[in-house]
Length: 234
Image (cartoon, rainbow, N blue to C red; front, side):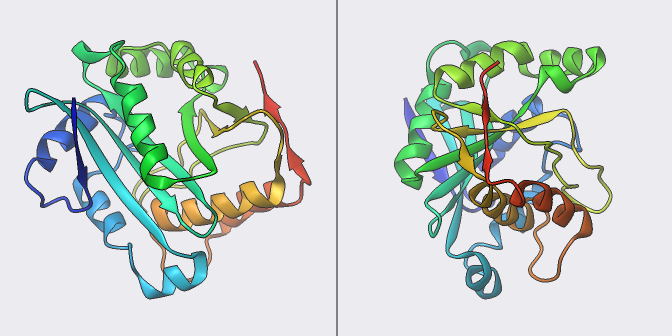
């Protein structure tokens, strides 16, 4: 297995990684279109954002076998807080259960050098039967099995109300998800989670160079007022 690291959507081969990504994440409120990805990558190195949130980098990584894209991961590494956020991790339908997802997760750890890694997951306890059916049809794995996959790799669900703000003005907030973290062997200070959400929401989701978003600020305030955030084991 070989890996290609992308920081530019115009790089050769990125279109194949993007095609696989959209086949696994067809929901327009959950997934970025190509213009959204370009907009997000263009924020890296932005002076105003770096001054406000510290240095950060965004990566897309493709896992290939015999030249074919079998999986991918997109994440942002926040250098100042030594944290990372996995936005998407996915594999092709015929490549699941072969360790490709685990290998991609290790690339995230290697490149980010993060002490804490966060990720969102569709949470079966918050989803309707219709949402779970659509999720399974796209991803080829039941939401419960996906949550178990992340738990076996050290991730735990944070005990907070989690809603992702809209990826763009024409989209809706994305609910039915939980925020997860690794390592998950002890509670995480509320200030740490709130700080991460601020960086992730304003940079990766809202792509907002200045100003504040009331919806986002309300979500962050709920977390910031709590001394620590427990990890839910079930």
